[in-house]
Length: 458
Image (cartoon, rainbow, N blue to C red; front, side, top):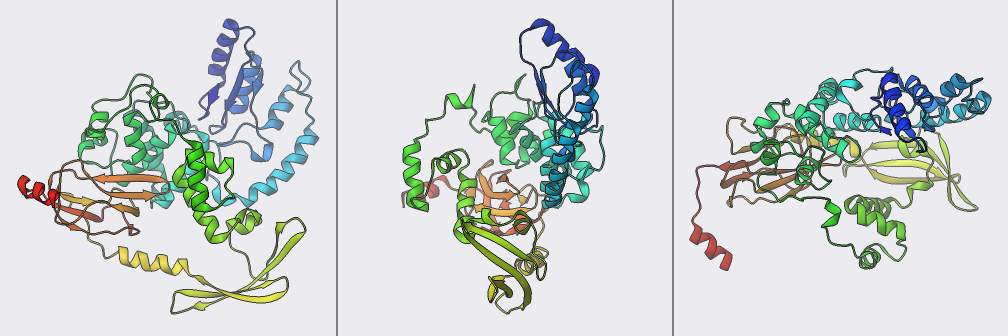
């Protein structure tokens, strides 16, 4: 039983597990939950009492909130009873102390919850998604609107048909929630305006049936308005897609990245081609970053801080950070450090300065006119991945124009109407804010069919 959002309350747990046990006396029942509301310890005790064989827990210092319930609390609750776990609290405490220190290293990625929140019974957000979605929302400039994003998550879920929310379907709901907040939409208006909106790619693909068929079917007319005539998949997607040629893929990867490609690399590329490509590009630029200590990888080193990097067995490198120089005219800074006690200096691009320059450029961009259908603005902040439109060309309604990306969320902006492209304001790699003009279409302009045919022949 996977309760990914922690919605099981003690009494509901007793009813569910008890009914399953009564009907299936020999079935192994394993319950997994999250503690977002703070009721998970009580629910797992209820599950055990009702006949569950296994319940998932977490070491005390890693438990609670969006994680699993506390191992120590449940072990202590059963001490001296017929469900005695045999796990000593002193042994748990030793592990708790270790993981408490490890957790502090990853504190920047905490979800931000300081206490249990019964709001989860309303928005139904999976515990594993909570911190990721908050980080994504902040990156999209919606950090101060987190409360609205949480409420929009519940509205997005209803608009999508109240679906089962677990990876990857939970991402679809989260992407739509961010999209709704960024564009000032609610559960009603997102359906009403769907035909003229450019939705995140994950939402479009969900509606196409790429991740399966939801229980009860797809919501209409929302689905038809989102798809705008795009193809759909009926039944299980894996049943109709062509088989992968892993041997051929391995050859392609070795030709592109070298002979060191492993079976794991091939599987990664087959499942997540873009993510794997980005990973390899990072490795080509920075080498194997897995040798760095976690803290140094996640956050900047302090002045005079020294780390030890084990390049291979018996080969340790001592690196001490000393100072950062002034910004150079070429946008670089000199970074001073010691390598095994020997002073070194390298030039590193100042990305902070570059971002400030980008922000200054973004501030002078023209805004889209919401009263003009052909004035197409960015549905949310992000980076331009592709520009598919050319000024002067004729486009049909629904034709893709620009592809945006923000925190693994891709959005294809399509033409809401037919007409001639008067102006394309962006190029590949541009940073863009929500509402800024991407493309301007002259709705009244027509095209001569014979001219188009002649151009195509030419």
